[in-house]
Amino acid sequence: MAIMGRNGSINVRRPSGAKGQDMKLKEIIKDNHVRFLRYRQGVLYYAVTVPGVSSELMFPVPVADVGDATVEAQEKAIMLMRYIRKAIAQGTLVPAFKDRTAPQRE
Image 1 (tube, rainbow, N blue to C red):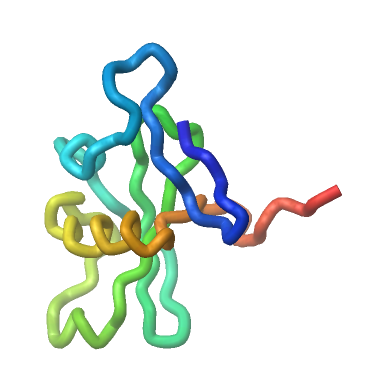
Image 2: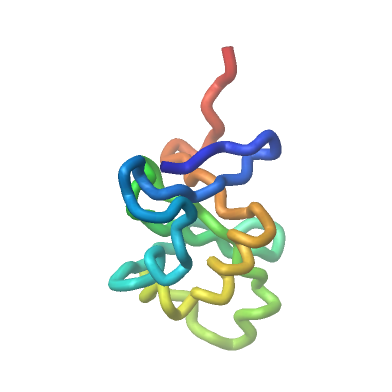
């Protein structure tokens, strides 16, 4: 389960009944893939499916870090582990909305 913070960040938690509380990076990247979502203002955004979370989560990758590498539509999650780890630490692992807009608040 993911818990939304005040600033829109996600605390990734295991489903209830699972051992331990916080999900480890290893569990997110093991046998998993990320997919390219969009580019905006010098940042590439990728989405990853996280076990126990109902929607995909997205994280940023600065274009400056890419250099002359090829950006693929899909990569193994381990290839972008550095950025997933960074997003968890900085609170930038957030829901990736399929309609590209945040849900409307009532």
